[in-house]
Length: 305
Image (tube, helix red, strand yellow):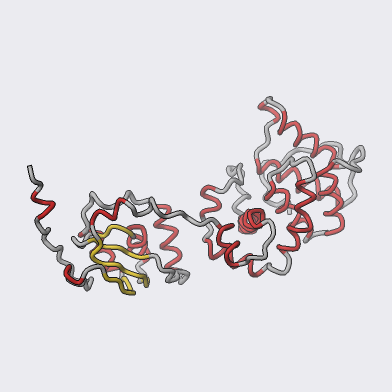
């Protein structure tokens, strides 16, 4: 049986705020400022079967970007098919409504309805490392640099201070930061960060790797800012075990980190935050010249530095 809906033109949806070109104009594009009123009408008029499930975290993040004036026209388009259904851009439109802030974007009209099958499947999200590699093509260890930027920003903002936060792996913590914030931070510290990574990466790679690279490098960067000479000595001992004498805080730290890494005993497990607290507290003892064979491992890093 012939599917009449496949050959019969669908009635054009009526919009009062969006200036649609006629179907016979074919695929067209323009740059347009979408107001909250326009976004609301688009969302309420589009076929619900077409719209993707809305991720509230993504909407909230984009809304914040719009409110703070950080939205950039980057070429990503709001797309409509020939039936005037919105087939791409739902999160941006929802964010516009939530922020009650207009945003300027490319808009594409009259796409074949079937192209919705290819949207997102052909799109690969660029990581911070990808973008830094493009923008700063002379950055060595670009993946480590990107991870270090994220770690330092999260540390600086206090996102690791909560006792409930036990991991530095990113997830909601890292995604709360925009790519533009991370790039701006790297640019602002471009005099020191690249050189720091080159100078210290071999210390980590030639050591026992008892911490994640970003945690080791991040904590050393922070401690370098407090006392660079003591920091160099402390982290060299921590990484390699060379020159660690009895009573040195580095000895206790290494023993606990090795146990946490190699033992199956759950009692010896240490979260990322506990490891950070262990290292920071040990460094404070070391720089003050205090012998400390053992000490209580902090559950939070708040107030340690």
